[in-house]
Image (cartoon, rainbow, N blue to C red; front, top):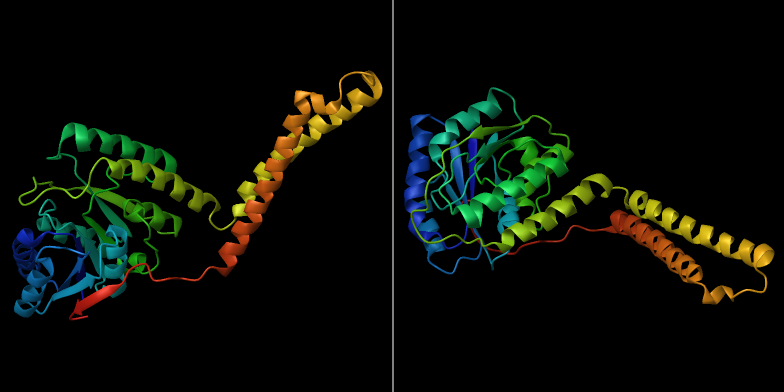
Length: 315
């Protein structure tokens, strides 16, 4: 199969028929073998019924329905597990991503041998204050922190070599950082393509300003995991050594001063340096314990289901 189109969605009933017809037209005109995988992330409208109707009309349509809303990352993870295409395309269901971009994205993966091509919505039809400016700040921070030079990490329109989606683990809310996860896994041929962005035709956005707060917190998480995820003791052990060294230095200073220079002066416990030494040595010990616990968890963790599927179609 040439292409798998993976589309996570939440309450997008109005746009599904139009989106399906548009994708099918592009695929058929380019003679691609394809599948369209809709992942219903706990919709409360009639999105699932629409997907069922589309699957009857078009055998290439497949569907996954979550028991409740588990989030976009889990929806993408489920779609990636089922995808069979040599190239996997992800896009949003709100008609803001243009399916006409698919042939060129496919060519960049299949012919130019890129591992991942990320869309760049250079011209956006979103609110400047609520989306555009926060998005620019967020993308700048992501570039500086991760070292992956993309302008639009959060664009839903992306293309992947199948080996990428089968070897990265998209969890939590890490869908924003799939290029970073791919880069950390060793897929270094990552580029971007300017794509058309369209104004939302139906409904309203499902994301608020809180997604940028969560995004920055996730950015810190992924930085930590990429640097120390397989060796937590390297970070916590280093911090522990620094704290213990500071505590030991103050302890030696207090002891030498008391024994040789000021034997009749204030009690050691009445001096502020004593409490600095005590606090830093306790902190150093705690950092070491955190490092040991991190190493133990890393070696004993088990994979657990992050979502529950209620129904599937054609899978």
